[in-house]
Image 1 (cartoon, rainbow, N blue to C red):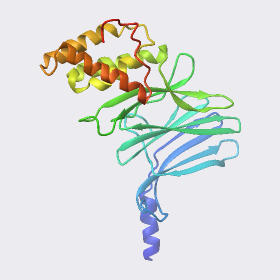
Image 2 (cartoon, rainbow, N blue to C red):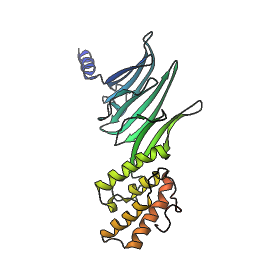
Image 3 (cartoon, rainbow, N blue to C red):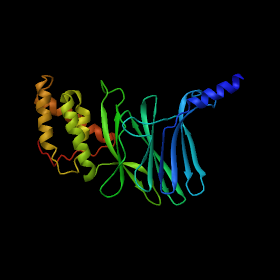
Image 4 (cartoon, helix red, strand yellow):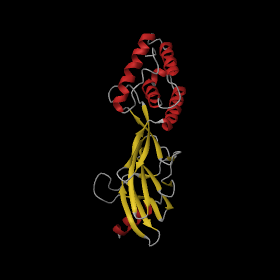
Length: 260
């Protein structure tokens, strides 16, 4: 009797999270109670299921520690007729999206970790998929607070590759520029200098000139009376030389002669 009651309670705790129909398949992302032994035993987790509509055959099922839903991003989203995104989290943080490609009998899945800042997958002008990721503290032990470094990831999908890679081209430049402007308005330059400079480096492929911004950052750093003009330039130069080590484009010194 106790076993029956326990199973009934577990079933009652399993919640439906989301479902979409796309290109001949039904994709579900459900909450479930982890029954396997281990650290997650008894915890709420998730299950991704894909059913073929024509014969209701289960063609994919994956248990995951992720709990469905990402707040501003739904648990399941049909991006277009070929791609579906499922989004989950670990205890309200560490958001992850899984992008599923469905066409004919071909099913593929790739994951993108969005850390603490989920944002939806979008379709770019050329039809490719892109997603924004902000990863904090890329230089462990060197920063005094949480700094969020932005990267636009674009999906590459061909016969040899299925995965998201960082993008710093002209189309992505506008996203970096928007991030720079939003960060600029949110905090003093001295408090967010690494991510400001990262955004400027990432935006170099766009039409916006970063030279004038480097000038204003130099002035703002001096206003805090922590640096003189030379000290401000030295600090910015240090970061501009360090940021390519974590994947950002190198600073084009020829574009801004005498600035740094």
